[in-house]
Image (tube, rainbow, N blue to C red; front, side, top):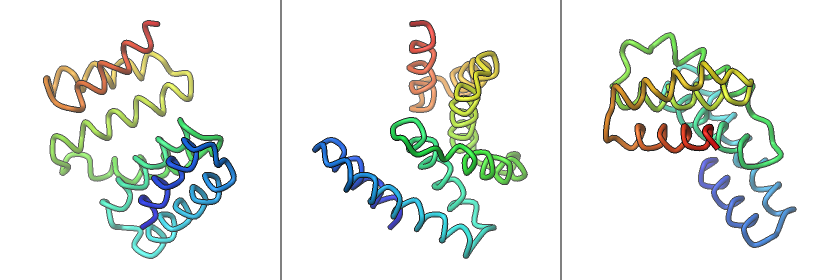
Amino acid sequence: WGSLITLESGAAARNNNVIKAAVKLDEGSNLIDQAVEEDAENINLRLLRMNNAVGVSESSPFDRYDVVKEDLEYVRTFYTSLSKPVKYMVKLIEGRLALHEDRIADALLCYEESIREMPGSSYARQAEVFLEELEE
């Protein structure tokens, strides 16, 4: 439910209802955090929260990069067992975090690896968009 509620926040923001957007974003994030607290070893919850947290951090005044870092650290312990698409979803998130931390060279490496290892995939296309934005 938490992820769905954060999507409601985006709809409220697009309708210029800033207060409702903030309340929904906080409510959704808290529900996701609670789910992870209750089942901290569930990698799928960690992946969902990490993906949600980086999006929230980039598109709102809420800074959830600490959550991204925590979940990345946890997910990295399982990296070799992840499916190839999930590995490159994680790579994209690592790149986005690196950009936030002004580690441009690290972000470039993450994006370039995603393109090289998964050409034509949605992850490669996203990486290409991020690279184009960096060139601007």
